[in-house]
Image: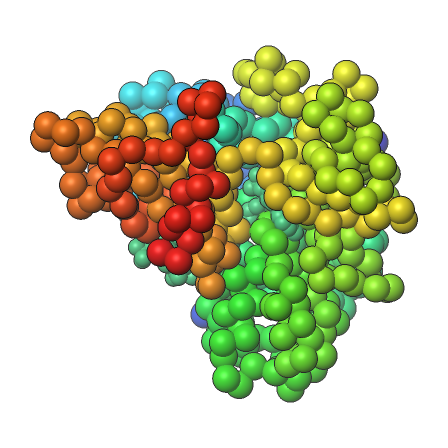
Length: 502
Ligand code: MCA
Ligand code: AMP
């Protein structure tokens, strides 16, 4: 039973407050004691802002120790932490603010002029700013207030965080993760991957997703480990920091980019015990090239925003390229046909799971939540896979229309809706094509109208104004018509074959 999630972590690192927690490349260092104090100072800001337990706090700030402290402050007071990708535009942020109805919005100081009016229009009662060096109104106010040490008691099933994940309808859904979801997955991964106090985690992931925020930081906090906290992934910076690290978590692009560095090899990785990959498929080629160059087999695991981590290759034992390993302890997985009937080993079907890690539902979307669960409680992931007799899972594709680019999800429907609404456009289809660096990248195939047709440039400009950079199609191709099947459905497989080498 974890009645306050901050307390759950504090109970584990509390006897090591003098241990270093976050080491930033520019030289700053925070101990576990420092983060404990800073999060209590930020909790005072939340209390001052009248943020009540269960209320949402939307945060769109740069990666920094302050951002981690703000997350922990939310846990302290029982608020629901809602992180947003810093790449999101005003149009996107406006949607999240309206949908989540937060009690507080926190953005970067330099974004205040743009986003404060958006928040006001969305009916958000209060906005604050937080910069990377504790500049901004959160830091300023925190210095004036008495730290708020009291921890708000919550129930294990209460929501601790809400993370937006796009959908096949093009409308983002807030996945509600409970205290128990986060605590159970953290404990499981910590044990499964053999975390020890003297581990040093190299952290180059963003902290607005499950991967960088929960998987990585929770494992470190559970044994008061040191974290080399990089603002973003930069292959040469990571190479320099690897000799002082023991564990790194990354998306496949991290590994392909490291392999492009001429001086990257056994020497740099001599101190490392574990490289973990996830969020997107790791190619067998990257797995074997990495092993040849470094002597390390990358440990691939599989997860989702709604579930945290689901499966993992073993720490001890065989790690097989192209597979995502076994169900983690306490999690049951199965591969089913379309009606939810489990399929025998070796057959391809939908991956479904049940366990303490599975989210409590989509925010204010009970019907959508119901659709994603089977009657017997299994969650339908939308991924296609196959299991071996002994329970090893391989992912072979997705039943939903999704592109994963550098570990970020792009839902074509969302981009198509923006393009289809433009003047001079009849319709569009956004597809993923192979990309050496990002795994996949997106392109838009567009049918322009005959009279006053839209140009490629005007389409790219419009997507740039409304969508985060990573979602914008890398190219636009104009065609006379889209291929359709007899049911009238656009045949994206034909488009993918046609534009594969684009
Ligand atoms: C940046 N850009 C991207 C991406 N990232 N475009 C497409 N896909 C991306 N992933 C944009 C930049 O804004 C830039 O725009 C241009 O692409 C090239 O930037 P570049 O410098 O090459 O990219 P980068 O800044 O180095 O970023 C690439 C990255 C990063 C390091 C792979 O995207 C990253 O850290 N990805 C990790 C994502 C992640 O944590 N996913 C976990 C979510 P311009 O050309 O205009 O300058 S999934 C999850 O949490 C589940 C539970 C799970 O299983 O883990
Ligand atoms: P998200 O919705 O951002 O949480 O992304 C979750 C999706 O990422 C999953 O449903 C999978 O499609 C994909 N994913 C995560 N880990 C892996 C992996 N190791 N291999 C292939 N796909 C993965």
